[in-house]
Image 1 (tube, rainbow, N blue to C red):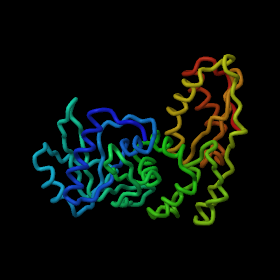
Image 2 (image 1 turned 45 degrees about the vertical axis):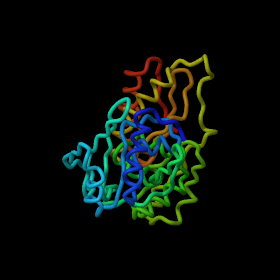
Image 3 (image 1 turned 135 degrees about the vertical axis):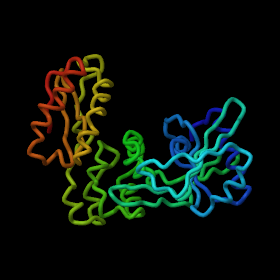
Length: 292
């Protein structure tokens, strides 16, 4: 677990004391959940999930605090949502309390579990945490960058188990969790999927396929290259595709197009007329883009 800065630490302990003292079951989600699971991410507030029928009890416990009810936002379908402000030494802390967390994922209204999956001790207080794998599927809709961060430390089996737990198993394509390394084995997750979903499984790059210029000899700024690929990626994902950076050699960038893009007859045009042009415009030193 990574250390929490003030006033977030004291705010978390205060809200936990109040809710647990009233016997209200809850779980911590969002960026704070990731931080407590050890991810290198800075939480901006505290996200809590409680049962849909507990609004009255929550309001009674927090009656002395400023409470707002933000307007509904897509794609959320949470039954109710309250935003509370805790005044702690060092500053205010925002607390979002979601009753019956739900949103549309892959065209399905998904209701996320209300009971915690695990817990972590903070100064002797057990903090209940949501499931990382469940929230991976939430972040696929809500924040793709955070979804990738989560996927980097989850196995395909964990992600697919969560997909089935959330009733997404027949709709979720493993091409959405394609990534280099981390023990990805597409064949290991075929058995629990529909034939249509299995047809989208492709063999993806392994770590041995990566080839980058030796440190100190780079022609291309890799950080800028990856930042630009993140800029491009949402357009591919909108059509059911994605890309993987396989390496650089001099001014040449090697990619793998996956998902719908990998089998699309227009992928060569996409590569040369779209991706290559953008990379050449935005990343100094790029002379050529090729796809394996």
